[in-house]
Structures are given as C-alpha cells and as structure tokens.
Image (cartoon, rainbow over all chains, first blue to last red; front, side):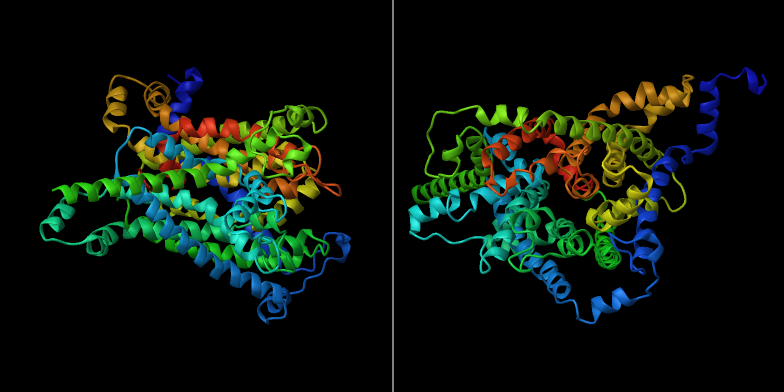
Length: 307
Length: 277
C-alpha cells in the first residue's frame, strides 16, 4: 500500500502515532506563547521608549531605563503609595479573608443538614457573578445619602458614615474586596476540612486535647499546604485588583485608593497617555506576579495530589 | 449528661445562626439588586422602601433605549468562541499532558499556570497598540484573542485532571481491538470526559463573560460587552441605578444557573484543578 491509497483518517493517525505528544501539546503552547510571551517582550520594549497615546509615530525615541529610574527614585509618589497599598493593604485583606473564611468553613463543616446545598449556592454567587456589576451594586449600597448600608446603620446606631470620603474610602474599597473574596477562601478551606482524616482527632479526644490544641497540633499542620495555596492565589488576585477601586472611587479621593493596576491605567490611558511610562509599571507588575507564581508553583509541585 | 446535652444544643443553635449570617451577607447584595431593578425612579433613591408594587419600566428601558440586546450578543459571541477555541486546543493539550511522558513536561505545564496568573491590566498596552495598528480594536476578534490568554491555560490545567481519571487500560484495549487513535479519542476518551469538558467549558464561559479590563481598554463602541455597559449608566444627571440593577439581574441570572450546574466542580475550577474537593 503506497501513501496515496491511505485515507485522510489513516494519515492523521500515522501522524499522531509518530510524533506522540507533540501534535496534542504544541498548538496550545504555540498559541499561548504568541498571546502571552510576545506581549510581555513587547511591553518591555515599549517601556524603554517615550511612546505616548497622542504621539506621531515618527517621534518615537528610545529613552533607556529612564522610566524605571523615575519609578524607583521615589519621584513618583503615587507609584510608591500604590505599591505600598497593593502589598500591605492586600496583606491585611487576605489575613481577614483567612480568619473569616476559616470560621465560615468550620460552620459549614460542623453539621450535616439538608439545606447545605442552598447555603453553598449562596456562597458561590459572589464568586461567579460579574465583579464589575456587583461592585456597582456596592456603589449604590454604600451611598452616604440613599444607600441601604447607611439606612441600616442609621436605624441601629444613629450615624451616617460617608463611606467614600477621604477618611473612609480605602477602608470601604478594602471591605468590598474582602466581601468578594471571603466565600472563595471559605469554600476552599471547607473542601480541605472535609478531606482531613478522623483518626488524629479521635486520638486527641482520648488524650483530652481542647479545641485550640486540636487546631494547633492537628488541623493547622494538615491544612498548611492548602492555606499557603489559598494565600498565594489571593495575593496574585490582589495584584490584579482593578474593577473595585476603579468603579467605587476611580482611585480617589486624591490617590487614596489607587492600587498598582489603577495607577498603570491612569498613566497610560488617562489624560496623560504615557504608554511608555505605563509599560514600565506593567513590567514591575508582571515581575511581582511572576515571583509570586513561582512560590505558588513550588507549593503545588511539592504537594501534588494532596487534596 | 443533661448539661452536656444542653451545651451541645446551644452550640448547634450558634452554628445555625452563624450559617444564617454567612448566607445573608453573601446574598444580600443580590437581593438588593433584584429589588432595585423593580423600583421606580424615586424609590431607587430611598433605602427605606422594602415593600412596594414592582414595575417593569427598567426592563423595558434597558432593552429599548439602552439597546441591551447588542451588548448581550457581543458578550455571548465572544464567550462562545472563547470557549470553543480553548476547549478544543486546550483539551487536546490537556490530553497530551495526561497521557504522554516527555522532556520538561512539568516545566511546560507549570509555566502555563504562571501565564494564567499574569495580570490583564499589564497586557492591555501591547494588545492596545497591536490592535490599533492592525485595525482590530473594538471588534469581537481582539476580545476573543485576549480571552484566550486566561481561558486557554485554564482549560489545559483543568482538563488534564479529568483525562487522568480515565483508566488508561480502556484506551489500550480499544487499540488492541483495532481502533485508530482518532477513534479512541472519539469513541472512548471524549464520551467519558464529557462531564469534565462541560464543567471546564462553563468555567471558561464565566471567566470570559465577566472579563472587564480588556473590554474596557480594547473596545469603544461596537464590541462593548455587558460588564462595560454596566459602567455607562452614570451621566451628569446622576446614575440610573434602576437600569443598572436591571442589567445586573439580566447578566447574572445565566451565570448563576450555569454555576449551579458545575457546583460539584466549583473547588476544582477555582483552583485550576489543584484541589479536587
């Protein structure tokens, strides 16, 4: 039988057998390379130029590392501030997420009952529904004059805080981010709690260990990989923060809620249109996320198939 | 015994109170959105109105004066193409990762995760500039392409686990019986992986549907999606929250229904298959 008498199906078969994994894996890897690695290199290149949104392309000049020097010399106060809140406010939010998420997970794990599916569905809603839309609902609810949050607070305590005022804006934005992420943390920790073995707890009961001891010496060590996984995933998520401050406060008042992504956006696509400078911020952001991803990958490889 | 029994009863009550609080804080914004969508112009600005006669004015307005259908079509077209492309190409790759051993396999696999994690906002500049010079800015095409940056690595990650759960022996015995590689895929692998493929597809659909950053920067008029539409209700006259809430209800209902279908796989989807749940 020569090649010409083979049907197309046989040819494809021969091809797939001959090259093993390559026909399966290479299309996806090629597409991802083009869509992610090439833009990364491109943004790196742009960050070394004076490219501007309104600029004639003929005026494009190579400016070397001057954008980076400006970023790290402390001249861009908003950059310093946004980097600070993106790291430290995120850490606070994530810590709160873990505490409250763990309490929620314990509540879910404590008893078996028929309506648990409904409770879980309620928790899933904030995770899956379009964040930009829910953020807008929060804008309505947090309105100082006609928001339902202040209606309830005034009824109970007789005060009407201005949630998006200079003093409270960062807290309010953080709270909304906290609200979005807590169910996510709770669900994952709940899944972890459910896979814990029962033997150590039975042994602990015989030894008379109390609640805190059981948590400290059994639950925490067993859950540690999962907790670190959630922690890193949340941190990566926080570095991507955009919708919530953008829609709640557009980074204001002043620059109080300007997270890193928002600073990048304002520099590149705001009034200035400094795409070159904005690209340099992109590179910093990409590097931060890559470093965090490396840690995440290490944790995941070490604990493969644990849960 | 009696004291211990009472203590346990009290604990149970506390647990259910806690669960009730957890549920309420989670769903209240959705309830408020639904209620707001049925309020009239004045009631929207009055949080003390909890019981009222629902009106459908907002729904009519959203479809007629805001042309909701156009945005719905944009979002749907982009999501469907994104899902089809990523499930097909990503599924193939996931199968390759699940079934074959090759050099630096895990390195490639984990690099995909790192790419999935990259912040969209940092990619908007190259996409914007490339889009500007190729003329695809404000089209479905550029948003479909941009959505592959997160959906394609996601599908590879998610589906590898589903393929690994299919016993290898089934495929081997089918080959012994004379099935070709394609027949094995079509007759054995795909039918067995259908629940996993569906779940992955639904997750990819949700991710694409909710995408905000790329849509904000890469569209301006023709290809605007629903998440961006939700930002267009603010004018000098204030924000029309009634219509905004209506768009919210219309956009989130399909997502909530889809999410309920994949509830079983929720943990898996949220952790890219890392936690089987």
